[in-house]
Amino acid sequence: ANRATSLCIVASKALGMDHEEAIASVQGCEVSNCLTKRESLFIAKRSPTKKEVIHFSWSIESYWLLLWALQFVPSLDAPKFMCDPELA
Image 1 (cartoon, rainbow, N blue to C red):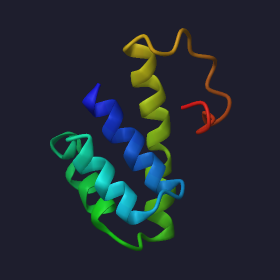
Image 2: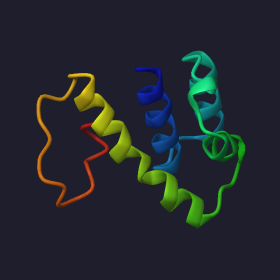
Image 3: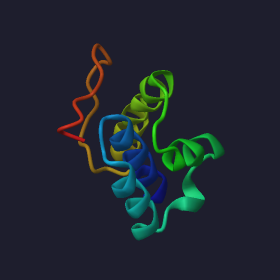
Image 4: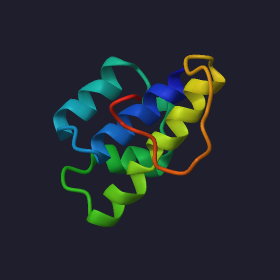
């Protein structure tokens, strides 16, 4: 579950979460040890590049899959579109 939380925070920052809020979320949820090195650098970076934002926005897909594996999501549809961040 901690890995899912860390992916949610990474994706949220990529999708527009404020830099300070992202850092506070990592600390508050105590998931810094669940972030990869690249994810940690992304979270720490105040102004990530467009390429980084695009790359890490796809973390929402991994997060959704983990929610399914943890049985928070009842089923997965065919992957025709990126999952809706509002649902995640």
